[in-house]
Amino acid sequence: MDLGLANKRAIVTGGSRGIGMAIADSLLKDGASIATCARGQEALERTIGHWRDQGATAFGSAVDVSDAEAFASWFESAVKQLGGLDIFVSNVTSMNQYQGIERWKQAFEADLLQHIRATELALPHLKQGNSPSIVYIASIASIMTANMPTETEYGAMKAALISYATQLANKLGKDNIRVNLVSPGPIYHENGFWQGVEKHKPDLFKRAAALSVFNRLGTSQEVANAAVFLASPAASNITGANLRVDGGTIKNVNF
Ligand SMILES: NC(=O)c1ccc[n+]([C@@H]2O[C@H](COP(=O)([O-])OP(=O)(O)OC[C@H]3O[C@@H](n4cnc5c(N)ncnc54)[C@H](OP(=O)(O)O)[C@@H]3O)[C@@H](O)[C@H]2O)c1
Image (cartoon, rainbow, N blue to C red; front, side):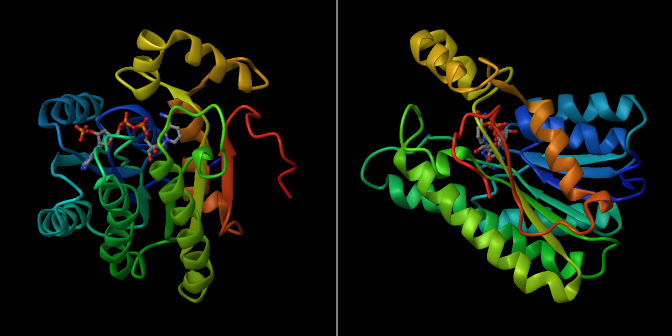
């Protein structure tokens, strides 16, 4: 199937490893150009260098999405480099790096507010874009209450993100901007959260795998496949969807 991604211009936040990297990589392979960011410069430069060596049009530099001013300036120059914006994938998370009683504020900033700020930066450009769309990476932690090593705040903020995005889908229909979410279950990748769980809490790792009907964790590529489809013109009549990529971990009927 041709996803219609040739010449599309995309920003993917957090593309130096894991799910963000797989999404950016897949967009590039389908003919899009991308800009991405991360805080760590070295991994980012290595990743972008690898894509460029393969002839892809990839941009990126280090920035912290929580630094509103720096991120706004990063975003504008990324759009300039791309020559416009058709796709925005909001992927960054703090993934449980909160500490102390202030953790709710940290979680609000890292797993909700930065997505909203980034969206407001993206919208004026998406309104001028071709088949514009937004994809947020949420999580099944938003609806799961047991067997998760993730913190309460993380799940609560992901739930708020799903509500925000779904309402946004309704509002942006008039501008022909589609808005969707992907909610992964536990995803294993190099230098990722679950690699740490595998090493330090192997029993928990096995329990998480056993929750999937396939008795394994998912891969970044499996999440990217869903995200890239939803971002693409091939999903032209899909908006307000929250697609689980969790190997059947959530057992309810998904009406
Ligand atoms: N992995 C899972 O099991 C899983 C499950 C469900 C949902 N998800 C969701 O999927 C998304 C990606 O997860 P992942 O496992 O790929 O995450 P990850 O391994 O932590 O990677 C996150 C990416 O974002 C960058 N990043 C983190 N904080 C940033 C900040 N403040 N500013 C700029 N860049 C930042 C990281 O680079 P730097 O550290 O260098 O900044 C990295 O490139 C997240 O929204 C997560 O909640 C993941």
